[in-house]
Length: 116
Image (cartoon, rainbow, N blue to C red):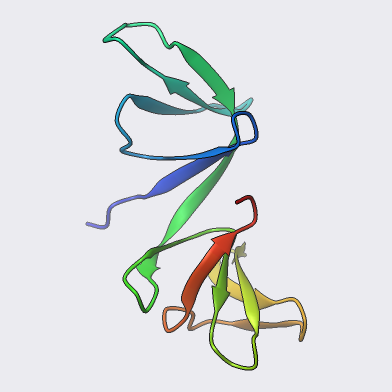
């Protein structure tokens, strides 16, 4: 069985939170996605941040780094940068400059993401 990976970008405090980070809980509801931060062994969160959920696509880049939705990839071909997105239930990397989708993006390198 494959592990489901996720992360949440929170504009305040301009930070990416990853599922499995110590002292955080990612909460997904019908209304929103938010991150609860727990400190000092409290049962109540010390901070709550609204954010944008991004799922891991289930592959790593050529350096072994996990690839997530909204990552930017460099395939090393004429400086082409591609953005990972969900297209009708399958992950694709779209090249904004040339308007095409690449289905094999695990031979690329993660350069960053839409938010950081």
